Length: 329
Image 1 (cartoon, helix red, strand yellow):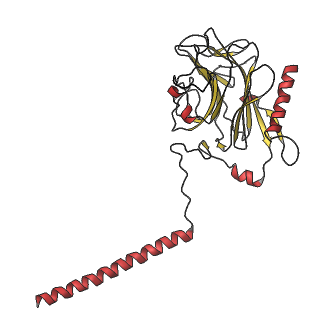
Image 2 (tube, helix red, strand yellow; image 1 turned 180 degrees about the vertical axis):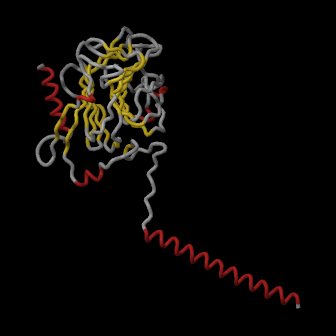
Image 3 (cartoon, rainbow, N blue to C red; image 1 turned 120 degrees about the vertical axis):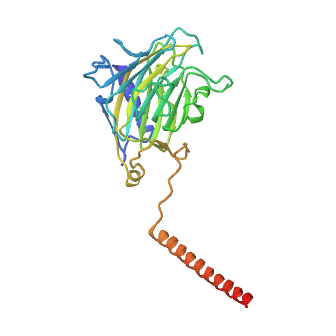
């Protein structure tokens, strides 16, 4: 209990560090949303008639955790929330464990945390569908790109997709990632945590993996626009290499944050995921609608040009007829 208290206190300090809590005009409050949370004893998980979470593939409910995939080759599994999330500002806390018999770089492949429009659709991206709509945060434990030297695995990265992007496995998702960090999370004897925070269009990911109950920055991206009404889930996959990928808890908190009128205008509802100053295929900025005056001027000058062309045409035709008559006589 003391460790849990220190952990929550650390999150409070995190809120202050991010400028989300504290004094003055801006304050934040947290409320656990049980309909979007998953914790022991996992009652009703996978039940067809009750419960808030569905299991997919090889995922299994155990006493102390939900195992997305066992340490066996060619497995994939997922757990998905049944309730769409309509919160504007939120924080997802993930308590997880990755372990197995494989030695360094002889294990795989990792797991993903999702906030997407579609749910319960298996696929090649850590056990879930590609070309997704929404947010994916990936805990990648195996380097597929052989030539890269500077990146150390396991590696955490994030991706926002409008449905047009393909996750590049051969390059470990580099072409579409928003940011990331190395996170040595395998075969540890202490708890490992990850927090995804989405507040005022700012996406941050922090990790607590050293057993010190201290948060470390991993990803910080402003200008992230995510629609409401998407689903939370987590999935995993193993291939020729494998690991146990266990989820101990997923806890979603609603964050109540004060906004200025300017922030309210900036944070208006969106219907497709996007990131400011990041060009995604199919997401070109829409053209500004023309004003009434501009439309009137375009029509007016177009008509003038047409009339002018007709007059010039008549003059040329009359001159041609005169020349024809002179030649005839």
